[in-house]
Image (cartoon, rainbow, N blue to C red):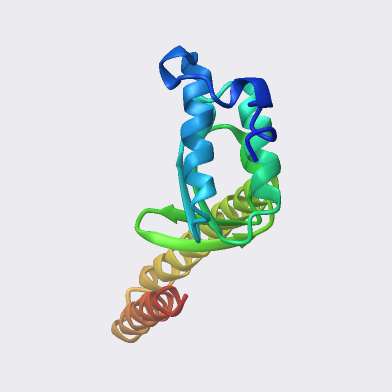
Length: 165
């Protein structure tokens, strides 16, 4: 496994103090992976690893049988290693299957759908208010009560529909 992490046989007995910073990080990562963990937590791994080490890590994670939890802003890295994305947005947790690009596309579609639902709701509110205003123009007690009752029913139905989602 040392060779896989770019430590050729001639370098394997070198004192740790003589290794460069990148080689030390690679050795530390290798030490952790050699312990055969069930779960690996990665916090911005692309910030501290050089390209060679990152490529080795990505290849290793392709065959890793355990769970990898990664926090990263590197979309390429996430596309390469993830098969499931857990999104926490305003306290709501959603799970998406696929890589980061698939998640990003699905999330954008959900935002567009929510915005369209909002526009439709606003249009329905305007329509209901117009109907209520017309009924109030008749200035009859019965019509006013009917208009107010219709508005209350509509508001209640919208409230219950939104609660069920």
